[in-house]
Image (cartoon, rainbow, N blue to C red; front, top):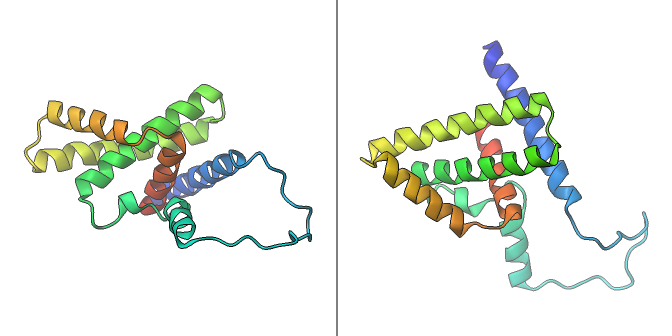
Length: 155
C-alpha cells in the first residue's frame, strides 16, 4: 500500500515537472502585462480550436480508447523513453524524477511485451513496430504530450 502511495506521488511529481518544462518551451512572444487585454480579441477558426484541443495537455487522441491497449502502451513507451533521454541529457532530472520515470517506463515496457506476446508477436516484430511508430511521431513536443497523457492514465 505504501509503495502504491509513493508511486502515485512520484507520478504526480513527474507529471507536474513535465507540464512545467513544456510550458517553458512556449512562445517567444512576451505575454501582455498583467491585467492588460489586447485591443482586439483574436478570432479562432474551428480548425484552430480542434488543433488546440488535440494538443492540449491530457487530451491526447492517440491514447483514446479507440486504440488497442498494445498500441497505447507502445506509444507511451516511446514517448517516455524519448522525454527521459531529452531531460537526462539536459541535466534537468533529479534522482527522484529519474526513479519515477524509470518506474513508469518499466511498467509500459512490460505491458508492451505482455500485450505483444498475447497477440503472438515476436520480440523482433515488437521492435520493428516500435521503430515504425517512433518514426510516425518525430516531434518532441508531441512525444511530451503523449508522455503526460500516459502519466495521467496511470494516476
